[in-house]
Image (cartoon, rainbow, N blue to C red; front, side, top):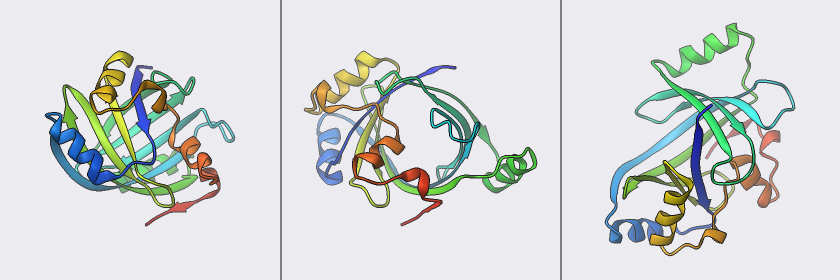
Length: 176
């Protein structure tokens, strides 16, 4: 599985971070609401799962596997699918039933070849996600915005929720 290089900066002010990105020469790619279904591959295994996501402009089916919490700790394989609801039905026919439905809001940016996302999820403070083609580039873009490497986390969303005392696995419907 290909490695995903991404890190989060937690508990941000979206307007301040958007201004930092734009002031550094970044460009806005727009805002959207997203929805997703999450499915267990092996019940109880929190290190590997299937995600069906509708970004507002496309739907994708992804298998994610967490090796560790570092910037390079997630591996994923993703394909575009033509229909969010039909893909959910197809997965049901294959024996998968979603363990949860989740919604989030995302403002996307590009800066020096990196994808930056200001994500807002129910019940937790917003965070910035930086994704690029190498660990070093993720750190360099973060530093360009004034964040030190020790302020970055590679934790997945479930662990981010746990930081705020919320068991995301226990929430079947995560909506605004």
